[in-house]
Image (cartoon, rainbow, N blue to C red):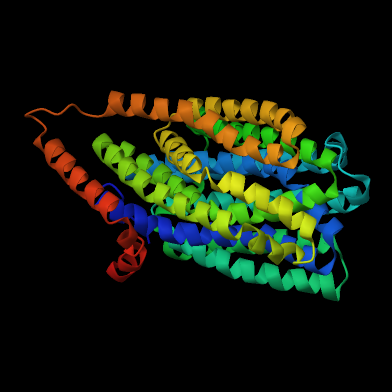
Length: 483
């Protein structure tokens, strides 16, 4: 099943596409969350810290992979919006060849330098060996991550956000079962959690491959499609590499923050780990709305409909910011209770620090919502340079803010470096989006009366969204009925 997002009501299309994407993103978080929960409750706080301190390093590599495959799929989405069937196949084949060539290099380099990277971050000695064992296994599974990320991104590029969700749910259930089997039955420790994660991700990728082979003829490839010409490779790499490096740049900021946290001790690392898992779930609605806008913008850009892009972005902002305010309130009111899920109610010091993190970050989720929408929309428009610049700004703000604020306020200062980075990145992204949309949007004139009609509809729908926001939370359910 594919979905063309170049016609119809933008708000409804965005919600229909976002809802399964949101559920899928939540289940994807369950890969690492299941590891964290089971490790923290069955092995102990040190094991929890060992798994948690690897997050920034794995994000450095896996974030690069995610950005790369997303960039390739944006080219696919633009060609799908332009009804270029042959171009879609060529784009998919190029993504396969380039992704796995780069994945091979990343796997070898990452496995070799696993321990040196952990030592460079001054990982506490009591958790170093466990952290190395877990992280090396995750890096061995990079090809599995590439397989799922590429295939699920391409399916979403064609407007199908439901099937990746179903495969993620199945894989997540398998992951949880394997966690218990490897950790409790086979006594494999944190290494068992790593093997459970990559095996589950491999299965989800194979599920996507099976579905494409059976149900998506637009992606059925032949030998000629794999003849990768230089100009076609350049088009894909020109968009994908800035997105990949942008994710890695953001990850470097996270590495600096992890370095600062490691200096505060294993209790702070455990608190940050537990709080970050809750934070990941809480920010999923904003992330999902943003990811939807990448596909929405790419398809409409390929179809030559910039006015629909502008209207969709405005309506998406209203919805995403609303979710951000709700999720921020949940973190502020019940943050410590949620953190207790991972470490138990008896770890009072860990829970107090985790609550600080959730309050400080949750209060500024609305900035993150705007950041995601502007960043993904620009990427969908093929403007990869500005998001990379914004990533550099995020790196600077977090890299300077984390050690400086930690020296003043301790753990709370480290937590405050996150929203500081969001603000620093959001400013250039917002400016670039509005400049870009003005440049590509058609001017209203007597020759374009449809634009005035669309603008009137936009104002009417925006007023309805703002004035009756509470009722709009029911839209996903209504959207499911429509389907």
